[in-house]
Image: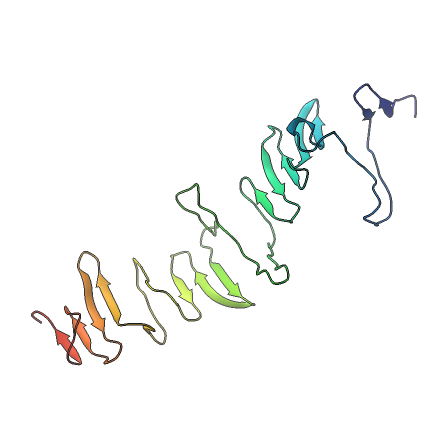
Length: 219
């Protein structure tokens, strides 16, 4: 076309110069482009599409080792995204979004965000902006708010065996021990006070208060 080669065959394939458009209907059973590069279980023969610019590789898309699922690679052939046939996606690196990220369930499977720290000391869930507040919602209702000063505000009941805090723990209504005595500990001292579950007796310096207030030691 216009005395310029747009489509040419070579001993390794077909070269297209310019843009290539594949048009068709939306029927998923109709194949418009098939990439077949031999046995998909062999790494060097896995079907893939490579993107280049000025002779340099920019990225690559290829199938998984078992031929089921896709991988997205960067210019250095490092895998950055893997999508299994089940729909599960694994990212290698940070995931940035300018809008919302939605997690939806699959039938009877609850939507979840899993942080795996099997090969690291800690995992983190952050609000990076200065002065920002991180909020957690359940079915549209705010359940937990973490502000920039590391204060946590819960909208409901905290159901926990142990609560550890380096700051102040406040309750707008009730502190309640649902199983066993309520105990209060002081760092480097141990148990400082106890409220018995069955009697309501308060013990300071003792684990067995016999009266409404029992103090072991001087006052």
